[in-house]
Image (cartoon, rainbow over all chains, first blue to last red; front, side, top):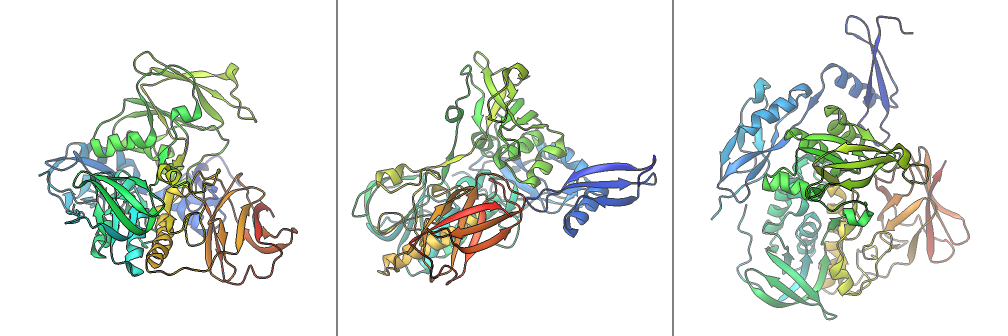
Length: 128
Length: 425
């Protein structure tokens, strides 16, 4: 039963190839009333997480000087809030590191205050 | 990364592997672990690792390594393992030719032209992308039309953006991944267009690469013309009818300076053709036995050169099988011949391997032609009797179906071939 104060939000489940179309009903206090459309509990959990606090791992590249390639692939070592992903990439466009770099080296600490570090995802030897 | 050049090139090897991507490195390690003394991997790039090096996103290794890695992390992990296991890796090198006695002609920056003698060979050359020409998009021939993988290399390795406003044709995972990648680099992605009525990529990529950035996905729609004199300046797109024919009366134009084509991969089989291996017309890869041996004794194959895999994890598993058998072949072990041919039946595009045995466990990979919600996989003998069946939940062409066969389940059927079908329940 939905009334005027209920808002419905739609999500596509990423748990398996089924790709269930999930719906989350929220009341005017911002609380979840009902989750519909999932075929398993994983779907319910996913809908709740996506609705209340969607988070993403970020993978991108930063500039590197003196390496065998001009870009170093990096990732966040945890998930950051989804709405900070684009800002995070802008921040990382200003970063330049110096070769050599080892896989796992920290390129940037506490990205946008999220508590996540940005780390190199490969070794980048210096060019001979 | 690591100086991985072998100090000298031997003239005799137990196993030579063509291609240093996940398939080749995996096969080489498995060959060493199966007792092969000298194993050489040949790769044409300056670094081994293959396409993983440009796949900087994560999602690799969940099945095979039990953790989620990015492409470069997966590549570095397996390269270090292979070197630890005593595999020689020769980069900047190209395998030109293989003759009937397994003499290989090798061209390399370090050693020039060399002739090598090997007991077994593993083909692991991977795949290349289908291009605009392969799908015959009409229109002008301006600059700015790229395959999605070429753009991925430009952005992730060379640090060069292909353009500023991009249209993507094809909703396979590479196209979706590139939609996000370009958005994160500040490029506008005008939309993704897919000929079929369903997306070809994982739902995870639909959500995290398109929905997250409000990039529109137009299903049952395709690019019908490319415009532009020197540089592409727009494309005409049109919806298609039930027969996939564009409805030109409903066409519209999308301004862009770049078109990325993400319309599938084809196994790279120049060497296989050179060897006159029997190829499967559906996969365009070699026909392989349950030991991943091709139609030529001692020549094995694994990875995307055989058929296109969704996940590197499956490539690694197949490589282990191929490399292990190549290693044993090199020490003179000959397994009994397969006694069952697997033939694609209703709604099945292909099965790999093409033959199996009744008394060994096997993993069979297959791909369906059409999506089905609730389906049943059946193996039928020549008289139509069901020899083995398994319920499947949901199948789509974009996701490979894995069938595990236990020893004995195929015992006692009529004939020497089984039809594999996936039909509604």
